[in-house]
Amino acid sequence: MEGMNNGWGMGYGYGWIIGLLILVVVVGLILNALQRRKNSNRPKYNSPQDILKTRYAKGEISKNEYDEKRKHIS
Image (cartoon, rainbow, N blue to C red; front, top):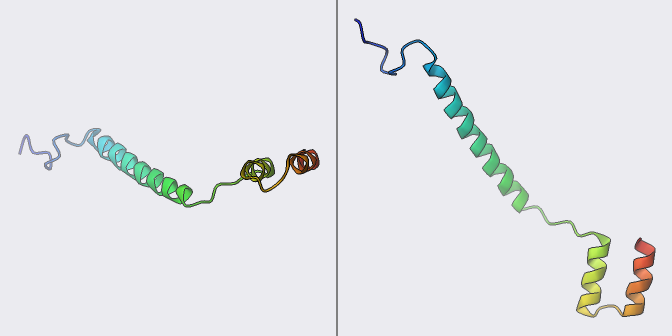
């Protein structure tokens, strides 16, 4: 029965390490994809300064209101 190595081509040596590495890489890629999908659905956090700048840029508040509120936030 020489030459028979259960069809794996690596015998009983260290061939199992390659299979294990492939498994780890595949599981890592799946977890990474799931994490990215989870983060893409999360609403982005806007700081109070960002909100204030946006309101000023849209014309919702005047320059005086912007300056006053900016002092209170800082």
